[in-house]
Image 1 (cartoon, protein in one colour):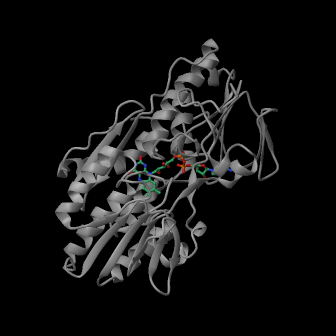
Image 2 (image 1 turned 120 degrees about the vertical axis):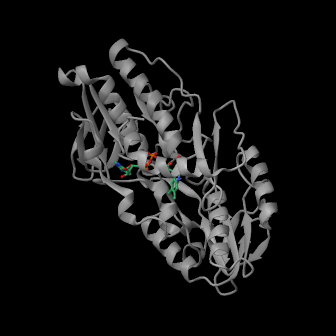
Length: 377
Ligand SMILES: Cc1cc2nc3c(=O)[nH]c(=O)nc-3n(C[C@H](O)[C@H](O)[C@H](O)COP(=O)(O)OP(=O)(O)OC[C@H]3O[C@@H](n4cnc5c(N)ncnc54)[C@H](O)[C@@H]3O)c2cc1C
């Protein structure tokens, strides 16, 4: 039996390693062949970009060699998929090779698209690529005062980035002695401060303590770089000296081009993660259309459930468990305090007051991630 995993990021890697351990006997005896196709020979720990942007980590700390993270026996090719033929159980890659499969899992991730809002890419900073995070650091390092507007679009990767940027920037400028020269204003597209209602309520209390102002129902429409204002679809306009964007995201172009899902979001069953109308094709991580957080922990918990099910399909012919929507996200609430949000499809999060120990737990997790990617945590 041939199992193909497309994408070697968080979801694809955890899935591949977990599956390789569950199917080690079948792989040794050549009953199962497990192949991963990815677009890069390097694996980036994307949450580390936040610390690069704040000048607290260097970019080389974010990467490991992808092959070194994979269990022995997994065939790995750096050869991105260009064509998906789910009817014929076959993909075609950039190098022109064809790979057929019995089971496929797609985990190609998502990308920020600031260029879709006129003026946004040119006149704002963000943390979503290595280049952007470095520009972010240079910009805040040189900023000497004025009005900072933090503006979020939807959907976006990592639901906690808008509050994290707000609280860490607040502390950053306070530590530099610029507290009275910097004001922070936050905008969010829906009628509260965060997509998760309890997180939004918790944020309001933290904003009030710090004098951070906010505006909701603000969907970015355009940025006028000359006048230094950002306008919303709803007709509001807010001035800025420094614009910090959390741009809206899309799935990868290859997904949309192959008609696998509008905007690059693949429709899947929320419990089994099979692509709608298909029994042998699955998607996980950011690229699904599920209305849950586009987060590494989502990809991680989905990968665990999916690995168990794919192994069960090989061994007994049917899946055995459901993914329950579990997500766990740390929330950096400043330079040295954090809280967390844990939730699933039925139970909302209940963020507690931030503590230093949760912040240090997050710092430790940033290192432990590499064990997690190997499927050891
Ligand atoms: C600044 C920042 C902070 C974040 N903080 C957190 C956090 O604190 N907690 C949290 O849980 N999450 C966080 N995230 C989100 C998290 O990193 C992503 O949700 C997670 O990486 C998604 O995993 P994935 O496997 O779906 O996609 P990715 O990890 O992005 O992997 C996608 C993979 O697909 C490959 N690929 C792309 N196209 C193709 C193709 N055509 N063929 C083959 N392979 C392809 C890529 O090379 C890559 O290996 C953060 C993200 C950012 C950017």
